[in-house]
Length: 134
Image (tube, rainbow, N blue to C red; front, side):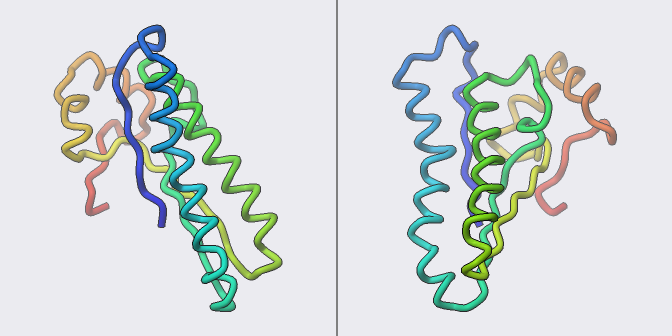
């Protein structure tokens, strides 16, 4: 299970090339390379499964999330599809799960931001933040 992600919470115009490379390296490349490293073991087991934790933000456009985050999530979605097709012959399943905002220490500043939460609730059928135990 690949579950890593970060956001520098800056406006798009404030991101440097180094910031962007850091985000891609952390959010996308790490999952890709971990999958590459795991492939031989999963193939040898005769039945393998890779699960990427993605985000709803890869499916919808959101004004309040930086483009670099959306870029990484969209790329992760496509990576999932590509590896699922390529590695099916090795009996390895590749899927992604795309939750929305989950209340963790990383997201607490968003939950406490009334303006942000109002926008979030407009895009959320249950109009609430998910809990880790869910």
